[in-house]
Amino acid sequence: MHTTTGAQSRPCDFCHAHPPRWTFPARDATWRACSPCQGLIVLDRWERLLKRAARAYLRRVGSLGVPALVGLSDHHDRFRATRVAGAPAPLAGRGR
Ligand SMILES: [Zn+2]
Image (cartoon, rainbow, N blue to C red; front, side, top):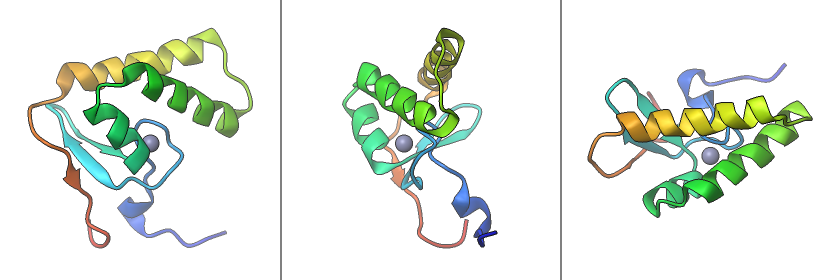
């Protein structure tokens, strides 16, 4: 069992694969993104982001069916629908 550091150990909200480095403001929550995902989001590369999330899901779960792919796509759609204007903010390396 390894030691976690509370909220900091929450993964990227988009690919679940890397520690998040950025936060994006949204109406219902603050979304966290790792640096590669953040780069794709600010460039509006949603297809690339979905492929990245799908690859990460496949690595994590071992299989990827259409329902899971649709789920990932819906997840990203929800972010786009609730995202508010504002630049991503770097996530502090310590504390909350
Ligand atoms: Zn990510």
